[in-house]
Length: 506
Image 1: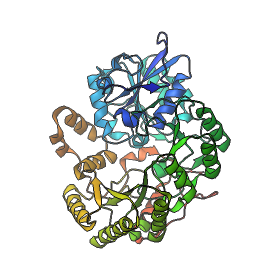
Image 2: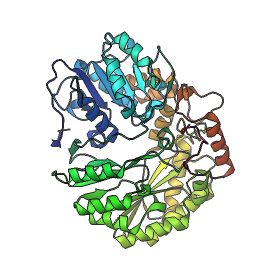
Image 3: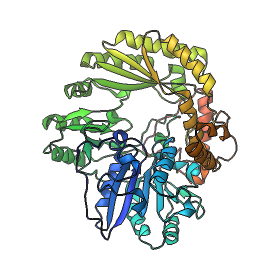
Image 4: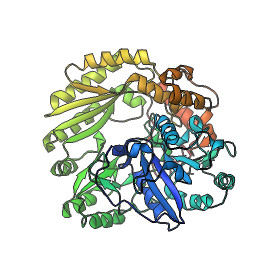
């Protein structure tokens, strides 16, 4: 990829500084729109003694930095954002092509990994020196101090002394760390027209979610929910309004749940900033917010019914068909041109009648909406540290059969979907153990035939789970009770002030 114009990249003189390679093992389009990377990039470069530079899979072949075109092998520290499970293979490719030995014991560099997938570090434990478990804002200062400890072995010992680091071969347990108060967002974010949101600033209004959907990893590892101070948000928007970038992408598990959304909407209108929101909750939409999105040029609204009403209840997503249809009506009246629906299939206990009911709902939506309707069909993938972590994966053959059935039931509604085989790979890595390291290496070096050596994700799991070496601050008993409720078709309450059910707030 030829790098297009960027704004606000940080360029320093690297002499005498600790050089950190920030690696996003995916395409630039996704990486530059990742707020976690933006936050780490800004926090590290605020320190005079550190110079952090960025690497993406498709820029400079993934082996030279954007800022100075320096080779990956020249950096003392390589810090990886592990956002999606299959990126583990991209990481191995980038390390090897960048001249960095893959195995931990064979290199001089220190390779760190963080991000959502780090809550199960085992598949990459042979290749990553230390895993940061939790939110970057809470520990960047301590991490930088540890990285200055001296020799590589001393650095790893220092990292192991921090509760939130899993260090293979040194300390193989860790506890998730979180920022009790969200740190201020970087004002001068890197923006590019090639990013997933176009040339936009990223504005996270809240982190975490109160809804407790039983399949969602983010809903558990970012607990408890925290909102960004409205005064900070307003000041940030007004500062951005003086720049040449005229668009803001609102981020959060549920943007429309933000307590100060009306005030924020007013500020954005005052300064004439365009607004986009990647995904919205159907049960929290308002006509005013939708009209602002349409005025800003957003043509597509994405909502996630997930499945039929019965299975939504099992998933603890308390969205009725009636409420969904009301949201569709509001989208039409606001002038939204395209509606995208996220749907899942292959859920535990799913039967043909569930697929028929889900398809009937989509057809009803397509009939009621005055515009284009698209459906994105994704297989259910059991994730660690969720109530459904013990469930089996439906299997590639079965998923292909259900996908064909679902598509047929949808009639003429436009359908797209991730391949069941790609989802199988994701399921293997998501719940993989230490033994998966050799499989990943085999796939990297010899091709996809090596996947035959991987443990089958179709099996249900019992007993102690491999990733329980990571404490995400949610009790095992809570996950087991939530799984029982899934099987029984029982909903659970949302998070609320003073709740102590899961343990995250104690």
